[in-house]
Amino acid sequence: MITFSLLKSEILDLLFPPICAKCQKEGKFLCNLCEKSLIRVPPKCFGCGKLSPGTRRIPQGRTCLSCRDKTYIYAFISPFLYREEPVRELIHNLKYMRVYAISNVLAKLLYTYMQYFTILFPKNSVIIPMPLHSRRERTRGFNQSLLIAKSLADTLDIPICSGVLRRTINTKPQIEFRAAERRQNIIGAFSVTLPEKIKNKTVILLDDVKTTGSTLEEAARVLKDAGAKKIWAITIAH
Image (cartoon, rainbow, N blue to C red; front, side):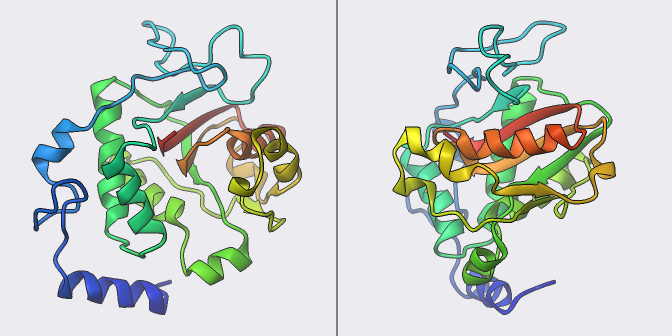
């Protein structure tokens, strides 16, 4: 369903042409030259952050042996560092300036990264965007992770299950807490509806940014407990 804020944003996009987040040139939210100049981070372990190049049998981004007993995340993909200004600017403009068309740009960056590192998903995969609590989504008017997920799902031809994972507790923003407190803040915040849609399937859990990973970890735990086979975590930046 198209909300008034989404319709309003689409009209504004037509009236005001996109400007590159890095060089300020008109025409695209990220021009071709600036896109090529972005520094892409090779796939890393979700737990310890060590590079995880993979092998013929093990996918790139696979959680390392030392961390596998400490996380529900099977593999982690996150192309950029959040401190890289054009990427941070794109995410900020999508989330807070409501420039919805940027979701397509971010999905394209993810897809290009996956192609470069030959990252493939099993046939039984589904994409699940990180949900917002209904109150927060009403305030914002949209869920940025859902917009990115829809665009990526179309490109990968993988089904999206946007209503399976729900945010049942409207927790305080994680940025308000120190790293050690974030895990406690998010415990019990998610639930799974229609678990049959993810049973024995590979879930691609998509969010815009990973900070400490506590939110992704808790969501992965709930999905795994509901019957998901493997959980991949994908973010634009970390």
